[in-house]
Amino acid sequence: MALFKSSFFEGFSLWKKAKTHSVLMEKLRVRIIFSCVCGVFIFCCVSYKLADSMIISGFYKALDKSFPKDEIIKKADIVDRNGEILATSIATASCYADPSVILNISEAAKSLSKIKSMPNFEAIKRKISDKAKHFVWIARHITPKVRQEIMNMGIPGIYFKKDYKRIYIHGNLFSHVIGCCDIDGSGICGVEKKFNDQLTVKDFSNKKLILSLDLRLQAIICEELENSIKKFGAVEGNAILMKPNGEILAMVSLPDFDPNNLKDTDSKTMFNRNTLGVFEHGSVFKILNMAIALEERTANLNSVFDTTSPIKLGRHLITDFRGKNRILSFAEAFIFSSNIAAVKIAQTFGPKVQRAYMKKFGLLDKPKLEVTEIGAPIVPQNWTDATATTLSYGYGISVSPTQLISAVTSIVSGGEEVFPTLLYGHSRNIEESRGVRYVSKETSETIRDLMRAAVLIGNAKKASVEGVPIFGKTGTAYKLNGKGYGNDGNRSRMTTFIGGFPKDNPKCVLLISLEDPKAVEGTYGYATAGWNVAPTARKIFERIVPILDEGKQERESALKVAKYIDIE
Image 1 (cartoon, rainbow, N blue to C red):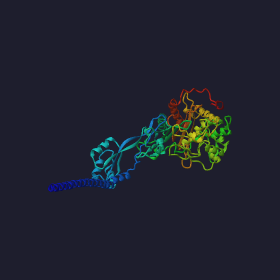
Image 2 (image 1 turned 90 degrees about the horizontal axis):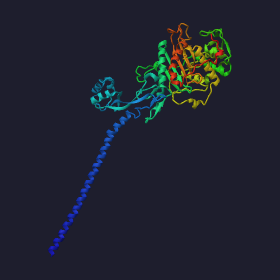
Image 3 (image 1 turned 90 degrees about the vertical axis):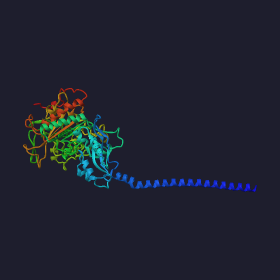
C-alpha cells in the first residue's frame, strides 16, 4: 500500500511538471513569433524610409523643380460671333529627357538627331549633358510618327509628356486681332495676351471666348483689301467694319503674319495699323468739322462760303483739289470736299470749341480696346488758330483708325457715344457711357444726308452700289516727309474712305485706308482716295450687304440736300 501511494504521488508530480513545461514552451513560441513579426515590420519601415529619402522623394523633388505643374497650358477656344472656331488647343506629345538616366550621352544625341524635325546633334547633346538635371525638353509638339520613331529606339532616359499646341484655324486671317501664343501657350499679343488668364482654365469644356468678329465679313474684306493693295501698288492697307453699338465685325491689317508659324515673322508684319498706327487722315475729318458747326449752330445748310481764292497760312497756301472756284453752299463744301470752305467753317467756332469737341470725340486720349497693342494719338500741345485751320481738313493731329471710326460711328448712328469692342454682346456704351451724346439726332441725320450726297455726286461716287443707300466720305492725306509733305512730283499719301449703309438706319460703318497707292491705268494719273479706296469700298459693300441687310433697299428718288447743290 505504501509502495502504491508512493508511486502515485511520484507519477502525479511528473505529470504536473510536464504540463507546466508545455505551457512555458507555448508561451515562449508565441513570444518568439511576435518578436519576429515586430522585427520584420520595423525592418520594412526603416527600409521604406531610407528608400523614400534617398530615391523616391529625391526623384519627385527634382522633377517638380524642373517641371512646374502649370508649365503645360491648355486654353479655351476663341470663336467668332456665329460660333466658328478661330483658335483652339489640340493635344500633342512632347519629348523630354532625364539626363541622370541616360547611359551614353553622345550615342543618344546622335540617334535622336537623325530623326527629321528633331534638333541637331550639338543642340541635343548640350541639353542632356548635365547629369544633375532630371528634366530637359528635347522637342515640343512632335508628330505621332516622330514619337513612334523615338520609342522604337528604346533610349533609356527619353520620355514623352502630354502637351497642348495652340492652333489658328484660319491662319493669317485674324492674326492681328487674335494674336498668338509662345510655345508654352502663353499669349504674346492681341486677344490671346489680353485674355491670357481667362483663357487658361482647368475645366473649359463648355467655356469659350466669343468675339464680335464675323468670319465671313473678315474674309471678304481681307480679300478685297489685298486685291486693292496689289492693283494700286500700295505699301500697306487696313480696314475696320463696325456696328453702331461699337462691336467690330471685321478688322484687317496688311501685311499680316501666320500665328501658326512665327519663324519668319518680323515687327512690320506684326504691326496692327488699326490700333497701333496713328495717322493724319485728311478730308474725312471734314465730317467732324461740319458736325461741330451744325451742333454749335455757327453754320447750317443755308450758309455759303467763297472758295474763289486760296487761304494763306504762313508761307503756305491752302487750296482745293480740283476746286470749283466759286461760292459754295455748306452742302457743296462737304460734297466736293473744299479745303478752303472747311477752314472758313472752322473759323466760325474757333480753336477752343474745336478742341473741346475733339476731346469729347475721344481723339485726344489713348483709346480702349481688348488688345494690348494700342497707339496713343499725336496731339498738338498748343491749340492755336493755325491748329484749327489745318485740323479742319485733316492735318495737325494723328489718330488711329480705331479712334476715327469710333468717332464717326458715334456721329452718324444717332449722335451717342460709341465705344469699340471686340467682344460679342459686350457694348461698353452701357457700362461706361450711359448715353453720353456727341451731337444731336438732327445733326447726325444731316451728316448722313451729306455723306449720301458725296457718294451719289461727290468725290466718293465710285463707292456707290446700285439700289443700296450707301453714305460715305473720302480723304487723301499727304504724308510728312522730313520737314514737309513733299512736292507734287514726289508725294507719298494715305487715302481713306469711311461710310456705311443704309443711310436712314445704319447697320455698319466701314473704314478703309491704303498707304501710298499709285496711279494706274484707268485712274488718269490720279492716286487720290476717290480713285482707289472708294471703288474698293464699293466691292466690299457689294459682297457684305446681302449678309448684313435684312431686305432689299429701295432706291432714293431725291436727296434732302438737293436744293442746296448746284449740279453742273
